[in-house]
Image (cartoon, rainbow, N blue to C red; front, side, top):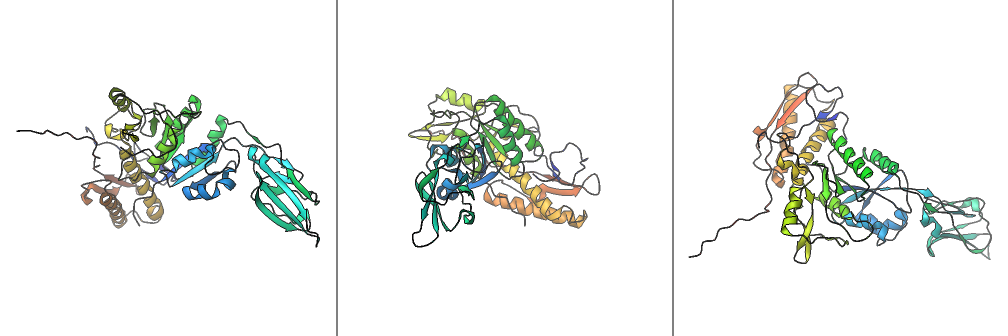
Amino acid sequence: MALGSGGFTAQNKILPGSYINVISLSAASASPGERGTAALALPLSWGETDRIVSVSAETLLTDSETLFGAAYDDPALLPLREALKKAQSVLCYRLGGGAKASSAAGTAKYPGTVGNELTVSVAADPDSDLFTVTTRKNGKIVDTQIVSAASELTDNEWVDFSDELPMTENAGIAFTGGTDGEVLTENYQTFLDLLESERFQTLAYSGTNETIQTLFAEYTKRLRQLGARFQTVLYRYAADSEGIVNAGNAAEGADEGAAVYWIAGLLAGCDVSETAFHTVYNGELTLSASFTNEQLEQAIENGVFLLHKVGDQLRVLKDINSLLSFTDKKGVLFSDNRTIRVSDGIASDVATLFAQTYMGRIPNTAAGRSALRSDLIRLLRAMSDSGAIESFSADDVTVTQGDDKASVSINLAILLPGAMEKLYMTCVVQ
């Protein structure tokens, strides 16, 4: 989030920055930024605490053991696999924490029950004064070191060694005492606080705890007012907000709201020129998706994001958010997620362009404003070429001095193309 950002009702801001209103038409190098990042907080049994880790599909495949203490196909990592079906990366935060396992060999690198899977063995070399110290996880060797004394050991990705490790041959010293901490509302608040300095497109919470759902919803609304550009996917939470996507499909198993992970990945990875409408579900979950036409119509009218059966596939019914209360400034277009992606993208790109190139660097003169306008036109033409907007003209952009000598006022108009969703045909047979 840029310093000095968000919307404005009057040109009276104190902080330097960019203040951008995106509204409906009443009564009815500059280049687009990349998308593709979702953010999740998960109760895991291994990994760093109080830190957000960026994970790609490749990273999850190759490094899931060291990052999270679990194999790629472990049920605990299903949320990450679901989100990464469509997202390029996930900002993952480990919830809970707990106690670290320990033994005479040392202490587990991180808290959690995975630490109880560790053993450290010592083998003496009969021909020298050296010892081979081997760390294993569930019997699998994860580190081997040859030393003459415990003090020479280097901490590895699993164990912080003790200088008191007995250098006598043994079959393996087991670690015990590792526990997973209870997940509290405060843990989610810490995650959200850390997330404020990150750039991402979607956030998700799968639970049904109303306190935590409200925490996520209010966080989203507050940060969007301050200029952050992301949407949050919640399970069956009618927020009446363009920033909240209300996921309606129930998943089999303990995590009933798990569909939010795939949806968050889908919306994060969806380009501003694309719609998620009719996308085929390609995840691992078994979702409730048998609805009557009346139920599907009601879901759309209620602002519920649903997947429904089309033959033997599940497809997105409509790419919508939970906004239902429409005004002159936020018309029905703002219930469409593609509209939000385009408007959020423009607002974010303009704020980045201004902060990196103009703010504090370029004089607020006719020439400076002309340069800013040229960059804005170039950015919007790139969006037009990609199909995100249509019928764009340079005349749609004006840049003037604001109410004081330090302010710049920008006005622009965009036209969003629609995606083909309905076909009406009249066939006359003679």
